[in-house]
Length: 600
Image: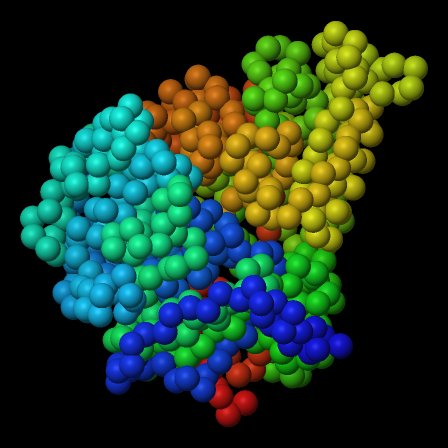
């Protein structure tokens, strides 16, 4: 049945399929083997493939396959280690952390596309500058402006000018982007920043060609359906929300697999199998979207999928005690298991008239809700113990994490009820609380329209019942959740955030006021927090910055715009034919680094 379902996706959606342009006929130089096919599955739909706009994990897997940043991460090194990608080497950084000089490799070309009028188009540093400027175009409304906001000399000022004139001048000279030649860029910052190299490894800073943008952009300036980059793969078919096909870019020259293994025996085996191979080896990636958990596992067991994730509800069916069950290991199934560098946190919309604001009664309401929720029970019920509770906003494996930190927000439902009583949230004759002014108190909790989302909604209904507050469940598709969240339209949600780069700054920015509309999902603006965050950006990693982070964490607990919940395990299972796969904590996709045994 599942096999028919998989094949039916393409038939049913053929009319809405978007055919993609193939590379012009020429002798391929890519080392990829067209007969090596990897079948992959997304548990939620993609949203589109413009690096400046995309902000969901699943679209990012495609973006990272098609486009390239200046830097990336070593496939095997743990903790994550920054390495050059299109850059010749790591950046040359001034002692004060305010000047970065970066050299680009020569001879890198964009994939063939009609936008280039039949000519080979070489990648230059001007393409990166153009792509960075795009993040600041008010018309585009990128959710990733924060990556360079307040940092590059002259860039914020150009954006402000565009807001006044209604036109962003892409030909304007930005003092902070000094092009020394076609292949050398010197970036001048307004203040010290020792994380810029990691930011330039994050896919929103991928190089895009201006010709492509101008040919395919929509009314907002977005190019979500025509990704053209310099990376190892091309998007050659897209059935929106159902199926994607990535085909090896025939003009991508590839690279020699030369990663080092440490003491980990698993890494040593990977090195023994892959060292010296020209990559990528896999010629085609076939991606299906399967929202239902059981469908993904059945497809894997039926050998219709090569790699999939065992999210919480599926883990007990294939795993026990953090390991695969014997019936899976006997078949040669492989498990790659990590604690994701993420936080799943609960937020309450600070712009919402019921939940938002910094008055004492609003703070009391949010703190009471935070204390009424049993995180450990949620982990057990929703995620089948496939997560660890967190106390601190920065998760394990990320620079700045404090394993000894203890949050002041703990599970204390009795205290929560007493707090609501004290601040006038009275229980009426019907058993439900009202607002201090006597009006009904109803809270809407939003979640993904899948089995996980349903379970989360049920858990939160139990929490709200404990403190006598009416809750209404609101299940939405993943893209609709993200859209409403960005516009501050959700009242409450459990929001997961996985590291874009392995530094605490990437997590503390989630609650920074100026990031509303970008990554500040709870739309919180707490002046004391914002001042400390701005100060932390001027400091390198170390005790002084850690002290600021601790103060910021306490401010979050006192005002309760959010409560930190947990970090989930990521359990990736692979068929025996997959060679050398290991889940990376930062890279979204790894298929350009492993191989397929097509004889199996």
